[in-house]
Length: 172
Image 1 (cartoon, rainbow, N blue to C red):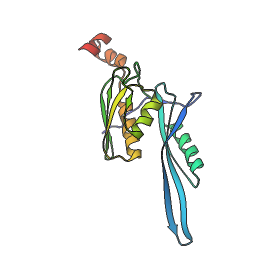
Image 2 (image 1 turned 45 degrees about the vertical axis):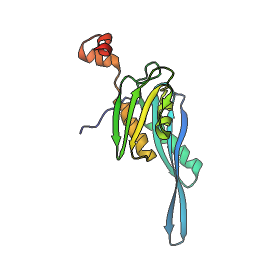
Image 3 (image 1 turned 90 degrees about the horizontal axis):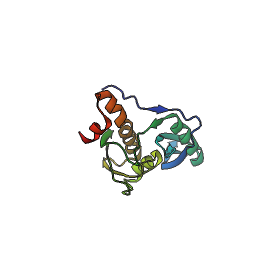
Image 4 (image 1 turned 120 degrees about the vertical axis):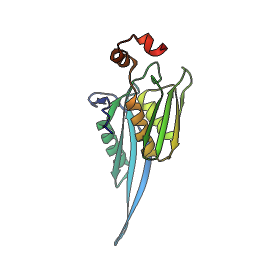
């Protein structure tokens, strides 16, 4: 299958807020004893359609989070957000994690689980129905959510591609 080209964004002068999704303590046993290190899964976003995720690994938690933030700033994508929700339903899969996101009416809020909630809120989505199916592994759920958000298409671009009006795209 061809690799999808998401709407990549440069970090530049964006005002990004970060959320730590998961911190994992990793133990390596060597001849001299145990060595502890930490990995941190971080999501950053400007709550206005730009979101990114990253993984940082270090001997200290704070250093792992900092590395995760730097990695997340390198993986930013633009998400089409319309009136606080997404333009259409989307399903995506990453590993054993499957996610389904649907647009919702104004006032619904973000109905989503922990890892998905962090990504959707960082993207600036205020009203959405989301369900995580399959694996609950935070890394794969975040990646699947990103894949779903990256596959979203703006109605204006669909109207141009089809050669019809925007009204016809929504009403059929």
